[in-house]
Length: 571
Image (tube, rainbow, N blue to C red):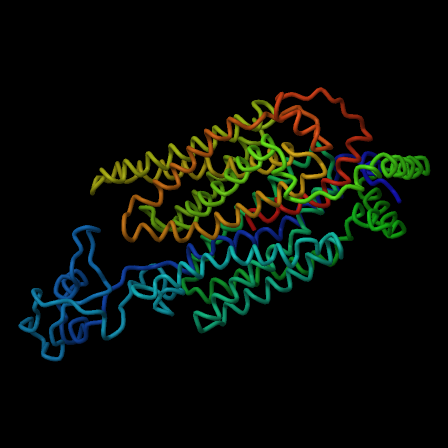
């Protein structure tokens, strides 16, 4: 077998071939951005009241405004400071004949008995308005959003090792067909049950497209992996920012879904022309195909792969196989993460940080519609904040270390959201304070985006090679739980408006403080065994020197397992 790390050194850490492949595969993550936060638009909940014919018939009551109709028909909830559109005053509407003598605002209240009237000034139709997911059925909207993240869990079970077994390209192509099929199916769905099923299946197939990210990590040099990993996540952000423009131009949720599906079709054709990952081909002992792909990349990069390079690649693989034969004979599971006190504390701390990052990230992102101001602008500005945080992470991750960067970002997120809550509580109708509250919310999004980008890198460095995949898998599982819970936390604002952001803020601050108890890994070579990790957790330092052969061995086990989990964190 050929050791691709040696070939990659000859190809160049980065070159035209890798850049083209990375950009083409990253195009997929536009779909991740479209789908991940689509409910901000397609499941938007507008203002609602009961249908009250003939009081809302302009032919019978031409002088009544919407405010008048609300005042005459709908009870006012002083606690929430708004009209309760799920009820109306219980007087006989049939006696209303063009005068207001039928109106009785002292009457008892009843549930809407003639359907609902929605404010369609922003969207002509959403999932909420089409299926009446309000009042007694409002929970179905929360369930539908939560089930999307359940789909990720299902996808991790079904497709967890699919890319390893059948190839990065094959996995990406097949699951992308599933993603597009679900998206087109959603565009034509006419029942809430089918909508929930297709959204769940969509997330499941989304997870299966992890091959795109894994391929990118395998084709670029080590020093470029952080950059291209974050660039890949930026395409997710670009996707949901572009979604603002799509939703602005098409105001029906069926049209929005159909247009985003159409934008994903070119990915299939682009994926067909990209060769399979040469690293995967060599690992699967398909050397002939791997050599062919490597030579193609070499031609594009204008370098020559000499016979000497191929011989060194084969010799390096033989040495790695000999050195790792004893280590790989022991089978490790996730339970090994909890075998010692030190490892248990680090693992639980990491899992809590993943859970909080996912919970707060999706909680803030999905709740963009609750912010004061324009929905489309707010969603776009959320994206701007996220991109800015990624740039900061790229600049400072290797300068100040993972632990300090993670802690700082979590504290910024927590303090920003807490400040937003306090300002909004006292804002009343003060426009300046309302705007300030939105600004603090954006600061919270900036912080949580940066911490989410940091926690993955930090996790992969905190655990030894033989447990790295298990550790990232445990963190990813915790993140799934956070995503599932986020919509339910958001729904608490229907009862106490300030409660969701308060929960997000407190958890963010707690995770930030707890992250300080993790050992710093910046500049520390990756560990190979649990014994090395145990010593590192206790002494907080490691003196081992790493050779080029160690790096090759490290990538052999690292790229094919742990990388897959990162790609699913925001897809």
